[in-house]
Length: 113
Length: 112
Image (tube, rainbow over all chains, first blue to last red; front, side, top):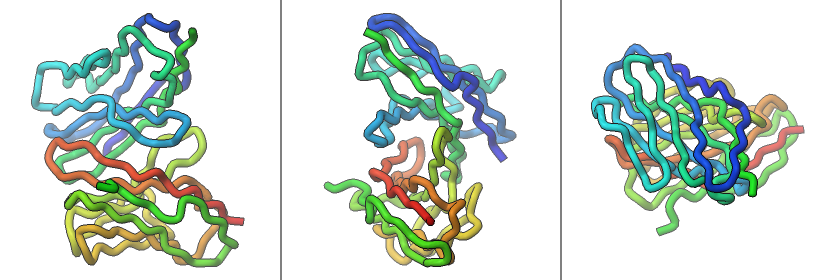
């Protein structure tokens, strides 16, 4: 069974600054996918970024990037130039090739003006 | 395209009642999943399906049944509702491979 741990229940950052959210996972599988999802107060689940475990290059999507360390089983999310609209709960998720997903308990991020 | 549609959005049940949460997607996705989200927690997988006629249990399957007779629909049945099943339920679908999940807007279920 896989586990996903987000060790920071809450974080805050000033607008325009950079923040990093942590995620570690445990699995015996060698091939899998990792995702970060955002859940604003509207409760929608929105994809932020994804990473395939076989790719060494870290994924980047505009202001969002990851630091993927496969050996350490770490998958952190960096948000640059934070904006008020980034305020949300962020979930790290593991998915194996059979399509079975495990989510962390989330990090609530508040961006302060 | 409507994406993933969940009905109802809100429901209140009494202990012991049964009901079905509906989930439909119009993207021809093979993979569909049901999750529950309790306050302050992440999503926990209840059941999932990798195609019509194929379902499997997730992390918290007890008290729930699913079936997948068509690619489009993946209903979740509560057999005998219990207060511990009070939660927000999300349905998701995805195409497969490295494609991410598309989520419905959720169903808030309260069991008294």
